Amino acid sequence: MQVFLIRHPLPVIEAGICYGRLDVEPHDPQSVAVRLRPLLPQGIPVISSPLRRARQLAEALHPAPSIDARLSEIDFGEWEGKPWDDIDRDALDAWAADVLGFTPPGGESVARLQQRAIDFAASLDNLPNVALVTHAGILRALLGHWRQLPFAEWTQLKFEFGSITQIEIANRF
Image (tube, rainbow, N blue to C red):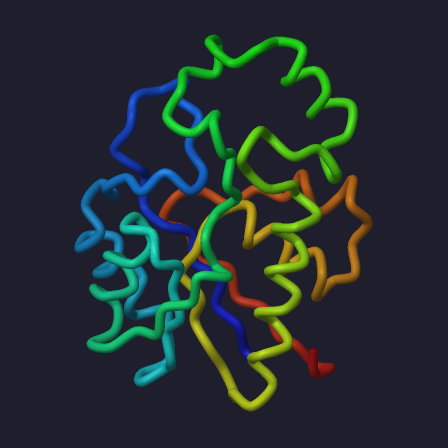
């Protein structure tokens, strides 16, 4: 199975603002789609996060992409939309001390995001290939799962805005 992992375009948001589940506009999804479309097999199914920055790119790549909430970015809860500098330092230190297990107030942990991603991956079993338009957190969790990377490695994977990463999955999910 070929999987095309696509990160959404650059979001339209001020630098230094905490955003995960915050639904912000993408910067120029049409030009990103024009650049990516030739890299995708014709007629490939496209599945997207429901958040605008991913969904608008998916809609530019495919006339009827599927939307799956499990592809949404991590939920930072009460931190969403706040400048990082305004978030309680003790809370940020607690997160740094337990990146996998810490849950921001009203949000979700990286472990929960990872489980959502793995649950989503299991649902792909009947597709020969697929393009996923989503967020860096989900892309890291998926690629880490498929490559069986330890937590310390998959959380450091880098995906540029508007990038595409093609992987071949030999074993089913």
